[in-house]
Length: 362
Image 1: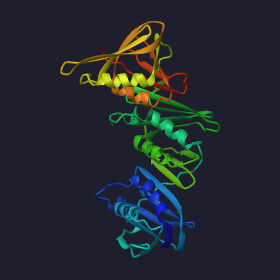
Image 2: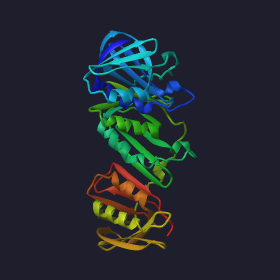
Image 3: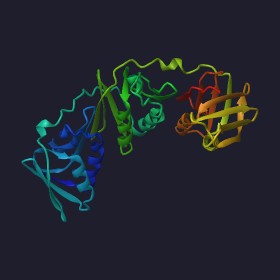
Image 4: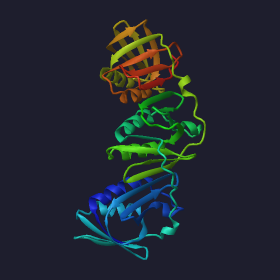
């Protein structure tokens, strides 16, 4: 292989694929990035056997070839070069990287040992704006279970229909749902692993325009013009989460989100070991309180509009803040559905996003 490449474009590509590099001591090939000329472009690939990322980069090709290079060394070196153009030449598993001011040789590995990243038919299940998808995934990510006790809860549930896609996540203590309108969806369901969701969010930050998503029996591919993420799917049946979302409420309170968040953070200083705070909504006022036998206690008041009747409920403040931070509205609505029943939180006037928290025992 003998190519010439722009340094900034190369490091940008490396930063995208290197997140899929494994830190596997027993399989050193997983610690590498595969560089390969492909249809007049340079293809960079990395995989940890669960997620694979391919990225294509425009380069000047003098000679075709390929090599697997140690990701950490390769990334560190080209990140510190300030020269605009780099020459990459491969001979016998050694890559020579030359620029105006630098010359180096890095020992690579034989590409025959590099794992095959599966290819999925790109029969698009839906196409969506990258920033819309990123925002939607962020809104449900915190509710994904970090425990592997129930594997089906350790990912984001995706339910695609012809005119919408529903994203949901729950760890049994709280639940998030986000609905996105579509114009050309195909009926499919899957559970995306948490790490895959994180990678899609990360890559979407630097992608403009649309992304496409295609689902096979046990894998998913998310792709754009120059890249693709291929991931395994979580096997299992996702619980019928909609049954957890109450259809009716007993009382409703509307508060300013910024003031509400500030009061919660103040109260959290005095919460107990279970991170509990109490919300007490009465006529035109919400009282947020916490008590800790070792620290003291606090009561904070803020204005609220209430509908139906007063109510009070104890909740985990971490879960409450996680839900509030992804709601984009100035005011939020709290729907009280009864003693011992879930608290439903929505953005004021927002119908496409729902957050549910299970209460704590008083």
